[in-house]
Image (tube, rainbow over all chains, first blue to last red; front, side, top):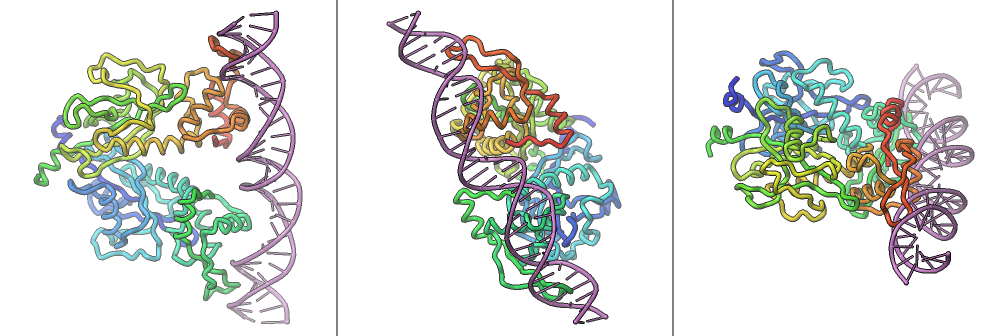
Length: 229
Length: 229
DNA sequence: AGAAATTGGTGTTAAAATGACAATAAGTCC
DNA sequence: GGACTTATTGTCATTTTAACACCAATTTCT
């Protein structure tokens, strides 16, 4: 390939690691590739960035086209640009991850979405391109982030129980947490609004429902508070 | 600009935030642009990425061409790709920061290096392109990193005193630290090798010299230790 | 030679955070 | 009503943090 040809074949894309939580496991939304290269392989949803499109916008677009969702948590992680990461030319990709409430997701009519499925993050098998590496990097980043900022709530429904919250943290951190200590710590932050409601339809003592108090959080942050779990 | 033209004009670059420490202030190495756009303005050293060049390699190249240094600490931070960040076309840039020992730096004969100078990070003025934003992002990242990993030593000479180390942390974190507590904590990690040497040529009681014990650090990490300051 | 000036080096303690640990409460199901 | 399942709650020992002040070693000045 001449240098000129290489240049013509260079492009940039975004890839989006879409995380979800099903109540017990951390999941990632993958699509099955319908075309070469890597036809039939599972891959992260992504697309080339349009010439007049910002990177964040492209990542939001990919997310919305696949899930129909807007305004969800989205964070850029890193660029991946190994020379041969894409078999058809020089493509560097900017990796993002987003956190969505798994119940909000419904397959859209978009053609490529037919093959979208949730996979357990710890068991995704071999993905297309360098997507295993991208996923690992995003996972590590999420583990850090979830301790430093209250982003875990993005993965839960608006109303949740303390046990659900703890299970989420355990799934993300891959680590068992002490129930009493966890509850003590999270409640002491005053970021949870007690809804004075309880679970319904469970075959045991129903748990109280809470809501993340974003207003309080922003207020506390402006007063110097920093989330730390 | 037609879509095709835009595509032809798209490219990617790396920009490198090169940090140094002069004993009291955190510095960044900037170059004065000799050509349009932003001629005469201070900017981060950077370059387009060659078609067959990895991103990390490009960042290392930029660093070496400017400073002559190889094998120094280098970390990718983020991609910046706002549509209009570059006045001549679509250029997304991958930001890196590197940590060098300021005494190792000597201006190389390379033409563009003539205008390279160290600037205090807190007082760089208005830079070319979106380089102020890039610098800010790298600074924030460095602040995080320096607490989570022993990268601060990369900015110090091989032999240093505890006071120098503390001043480095104070400069990076923009925060005064307690002398006794700092020394207690850092020494308790067993990462400093006491060289049994003292400073020379100072007009007061000379301080003991230490060295970062990388071997010990790697050993500890493999045993589950994680640096935390 | 002694005093002044400068920076180096050190320990205690009270308060806060962490981590380990188990019994009772509130529901459902049979 | 009894078995079952999950929810909820507090104590205590240990560790970590944060606040705080004086003597030591060296050079410089007179």
